[in-house]
Image (tube, rainbow, N blue to C red; front, top):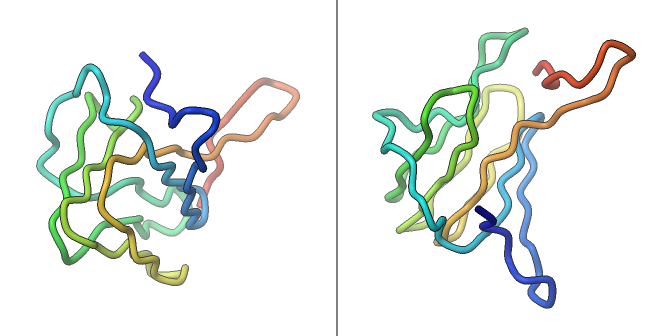
Length: 110
């Protein structure tokens, strides 16, 4: 299942710490609607990347699985230690940044 935007279209990315939002097509299979708008919890500080204002919905199976964000009315991505980002309408892949270390890949701790 690929939701990536076609190669000839510009991919729009918003990065805030270890979370990246990449604009995409509507997923062919939409996971469960989540009851919260927390994109990622901060493992080190306890702070969280959250959506606020506007109208948006977060979809995913669990916190460890891929997530999709549907923004129906301009919203704001917030975090206590990072600047706010205005997020335009559309579908987004919610990507948790990873890094390689000798023992394998791991999520970046924010």
